[in-house]
Length: 61
Image (tube, rainbow, N blue to C red; front, side, top):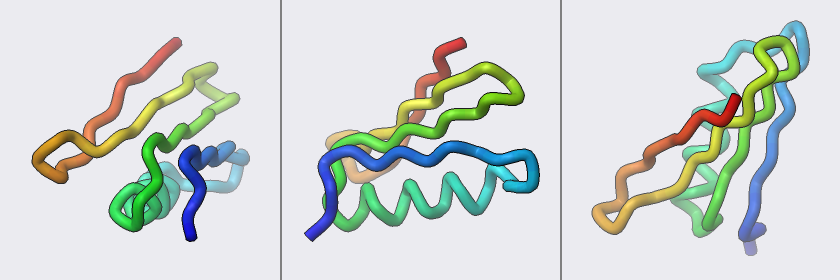
């Protein structure tokens, strides 16, 4: 069972790529939406699977 919403908050030592990969994995396993919060850049990036099983993101600043 996976959550409908998956949220990751980037710490100062985190790299974006591994966080995105984890979000992508949760989306492939059934999560509906993934969010990545980056306090350093003051952004929230929303990820979701499209109808053709590709993932896309929208950045909110």
